Image 1 (tube, helix red, strand yellow):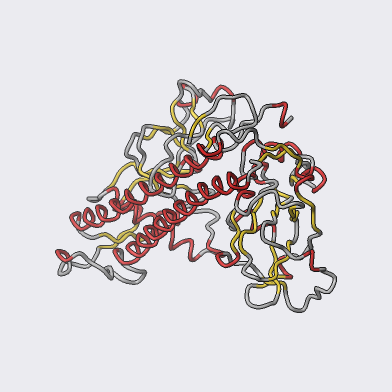
Image 2: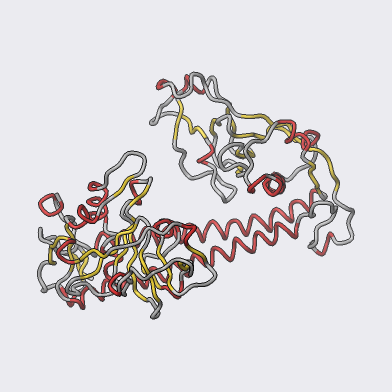
Length: 442
């Protein structure tokens, strides 16, 4: 690929064979796509067991469908067979190359989120509730290119500007039709860009599957390296400990001293914050899913606020007590903590801290299984104090901790690899498409 700095409607990165092909075409969505009537079937009108016609619900565009929609790879609900479909004409059924936009969202970044239908496998499909079905008028855009076109930041920002609403944002087909889009006039260049980005997407998907396998492996180890409820030895024990004693049991209160963090009152007072020179202030959303804090905290607090807050040094074990309850972390830096977090300050028995972190995590998982819907709404000090902790010798603790933490390192490294790939994709989406100025997208 070569770079060009010309102030024209051309990308910064362009494949060499297209360098002399001139500017991309600028057009309105409404000149490229026509809009097809959709339905308003709710989730109650759909099922995942049987039917003749499948249906796209806008919620699935937001949460699970791939931008390049291949019906053979997606779990798409059927329309209940009891619902008559006589009113739908042949043109109402989706076709490959169609774009489907979610016309409503509570989040600005997702309003107008879209999928491109690249493979329908000869199945019948309708576009449903809160969707806009767009069909090409003259087939100017090749299959696969449209999905990346509508991921472009410049086009996404236009859609966001055109959205309306207070609590729920929406965009209409009329407003969508006035948005500027741009594309190479030669379909071969479109195909080359789509092939480049789709191959990267396939790589990201493969790496994401590896990550899920690592997480499943860890889940299995957590189940087998620790005794199940009602048991005093784990199902799997390292060879050198197979003839050792059963694990001991004691209440959490007898094993460790713990307390909540705090926040200076009144909450949110401006003088409490210092983004430049302040100390990190850890809250629930700063605790990741990988037994670590996120690299940077959202808030930093001033020296004045720190006097009313709880300080924790690097290496402190904390756990979340609100929101995503039961997330555990061993801190990587000095910080202050919110009262929605619990910190462990002293241990009364010989403990490997990482082993204890996994133990606490599992205890909260057990509580979640007991809670209605698997969601803990609150954990009282009395409940915490009565948690029964099972522990082997310190050497066995260290062996289990080493095994799980090495797996956590692999999971973390794989997560970072995927994030780097996504960042690379974002850069390609910017470089392979023109950076249009206000004269084009205003």
